[in-house]
Image (cartoon, rainbow, N blue to C red; front, side, top):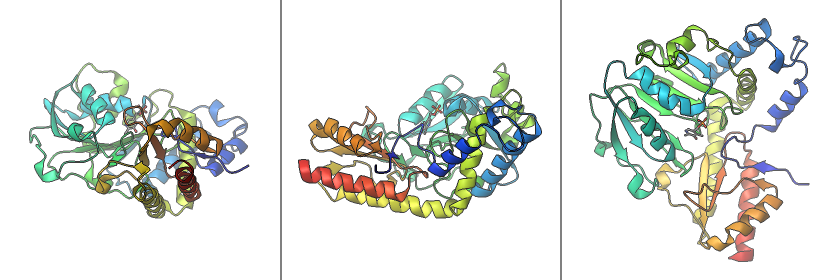
Amino acid sequence: MSEIYNFSAGPAALPKSVLRQIQEELLEYGNAKASVMEISHRGVDFMQVAQKAEQDLRELMNIPNNYKVLFLQGGASAQFSMVPINLLRGKTKASYVNTGHWSVKAIAEAQRYCEVNICTDSTANKFTDIEDFANWNIDQDSAYLHYTSNETIAGLEFDFIPEVDMPIVADMSSTILSREIDVSKFGVIYAGAQKNIGMAGATVVIVREDLIGDVVPKQPILFDYATQANNNSMYNTPSTFPWYAAGRVFEWLKEQGGIKAIEAINERKASKLYATIDSSDFYSNPVNPKYRSWMNVPFILADDSLDKLFLEKSYNANLLALKGHKSVGGMRASIYNSMPESGVDTLIEFMADFEKQHG
Ligand SMILES: *Cc1c(COP(=O)(O)O)cnc(C)c1O
């Protein structure tokens, strides 16, 4: 049987070797005489898991010492609330970039807490392009600027960091760890684990220390970054298993040579897939090539009556979860860090073959 490649947008595939390692140590973790799922988060065994994961992430992303790393629950969506709660700091306005589905969600939640200034809006181009930064309308009284560095559904990804005189907050759920980024440029970076970090159930938040500790009053205590930071993300029981799994993925990433090495592979994977799409009239991708996502590659078949057959045949060829999001249609190949280059090569071969038969 040929190898199975899973192109799911999230929860997404994990590296096979990580899954095997988790399987091997599932029943008894180290010297704990119990599964990592069954031990106290405050015991010595899990504390080591937690600290090693944080330390490896700090190393991988080169996170400066004046940033806290939190492992929280509630997904990226909880950060849509926690960001205004923690970052408004007495101000009444925040600036948001609208480049897609997840931006819209973040904006809607922020509007419950403050006046939201939409400084640029890609709605009119159906989230296929980003307006020239020079033309953005940034409100200087904003407490912060929020953007979604990779829009997972439309496959629209920033290739730059906005230059502004206020803290920058980025939803990096589907792009964190895929390429090098300068953490020091950000006030807050957050990412749900189920795309590029590990399994669903944990959210990584990287927050600059001086932005912690001045929250909108009367909000849930768990939503205060200070509560989480002062208790090493263990004010209450954290999601221990996803935290552990993330740690295993970080170790795997270090074995791959770190972010610089994986970045080169990611760029290669994405560019050959886009080249295949662009070289045919049978497939297309509408995103401005400058802002095409390296992680999520949507593509449309010229004849959408073939969609069903494409999905059926690809599934039978062990290429899973290629159905596009309903708002975009067609297909979407999510090619996160854990997707080996051979998976992209196999998809490209399948696409050429399918075009030959049905084009
Ligand atoms: C998946 C995703 C989310 C939602 O994450 P949850 O963990 O389900 O809350 C938010 N933003 C982006 C960019 C995503 O890809």
